[in-house]
Length: 305
Image 1 (tube, rainbow, N blue to C red):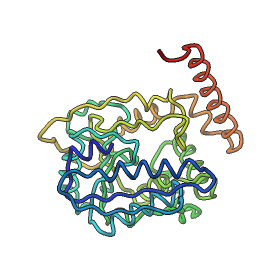
Image 2 (cartoon, one colour):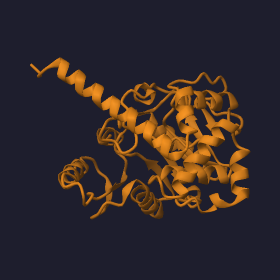
Image 3 (cartoon, one colour):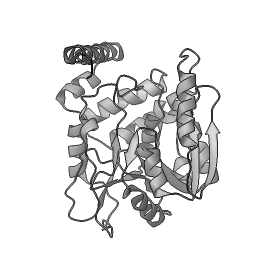
Image 4 (tube, one colour):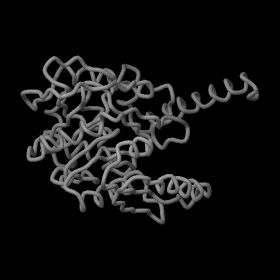
């Protein structure tokens, strides 16, 4: 990821890193090695750093970093460590950050298209009610609506707004995820951002060609521990230039349906609609099976030459 940033050579760079977990001694060395990578700024650039002494976790750590970043900047690009952007990603974000700067409905510019390619005859990108945060950009005026605790989720009016935004099955899955965060069962920041977009009827930009790959799928990941998940194989593509702009910011319903089917195939839909305890047991069994298959395969291959 940092090699891609170096190639883009931004003039201002904000580097945020969470701290080591107290119960994982190896985190101290990992954090140190990661921060040494981030020290390698070889181009003319103003650099600011926010390095935590202790681990804040996926919710407070990322939220605090974006808060800090957008306190200093009106807008900008946000990349996590496992997101690999193409060089087209940066000018794509820059152009659209300027174009929609004063449009409150547009709350983010996404770089990841989970479908890989989308045949949009009207423009180089589509609008969506989803919040693709694997490489994205936003404005301070949008981030000010972020609600990490989903404080309004308990209000019937808020649930009605979210329900009106999507089909029932998607709403059922979304409701369970928002319940998990609201009730403290899941520690993550991105559902709070998705909720902020939905409750404010905001939209995101998604490029017609995928501009960011995610390589963070393995047994060391916090949430995405299944290497076989289809998101690991989404290729990146160049995007046409100059950009062709859609005539409306209305979400593309055909794209939304394709996105949901891709993200939630039937088996995953069944698991996602289970009660929390049953869902966690099934997921743990799947993760265990994946790890076992990996160990068996490694044993079958034998030692490396």
